[in-house]
Length: 424
Picture (cartoon, rainbow, N blue to C red):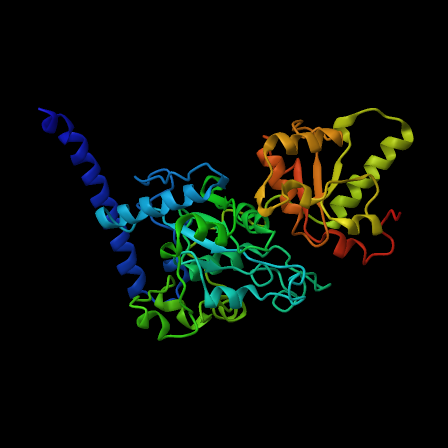
């Protein structure tokens, strides 16, 4: 009796899975046959895609990570196991769990006084399974590729949507995939990678920050759950009895050097084409320029001079730099160092919400008021993402208009003598 009671639901699930498998196989065969020089064909999940393409809401599978911004190491392990089980029993059209190594260092290693090279560390391992290494200095509006958009050669400016889209194609990351961002011990700025995906319109419910380092992951789960072989040595994996299978498709093989994407070569080859990855924004979301910051500062100063008491009209300028804030900052800026937002013993773990809440309240920041505009700035547009993440965790109702990140930050602001500055 019990078997017949559940049989209809099993039949429905089987039919859904077979239909999804057919759609995926049809797309793959169609894409392989078409030349990569026909952008109207390689578009995937875009406005030109056929109506039969699966939408995020139509997919029959949802990972347990869905909706979690901060995820524990155990959450990540569970998601891995869930994905392995799904791959064995169903089809490849389900959203993948994609690991992104976001290791990036702004200071020399205190033990060696040398700068660590995260791409080299990624190549030689260990890595989480099939992890992608994404460099915020390469997937960016660089002066080399976009001199008109970045004439001052500012570092790691947010990329144009097209560049992000073709990079996602090369990394084999789809719109429906769950992206789990992690880093090695000593790195700090994984929120910057998280915000890169958010700013480009990737579903926020599918972008996750692992709390803890890769080393913490190994301690908790063991070395059997990571890749330890070097991507630079073609014999190392076979000698260890491991069959290496890179995550990227054959089409993009020539744009990778030992597993690290050469963004310049990729851009030069695909400029003008339509990415399969659908970037749903015309420019990075929640990003502002120096003109918008200047307007906000002038408006604040005008309100102060006229004694107009209308808090909603004043913009909060939140500066997340460390000690360099004292050397110069914008008028009316409130200082909240990014280092105070993370665990003092583990910079890859955000502090409890209760502690972060107290920091904002101590500074008189009305973070829950959606009518109160907040502009975040830092040294070069990296640590500022800690502030944005903190606001999200506090429950602020984010909108494109009320919460902004100044991309150029102090690195750009200080280059203009006519812009107002405060020095202590």
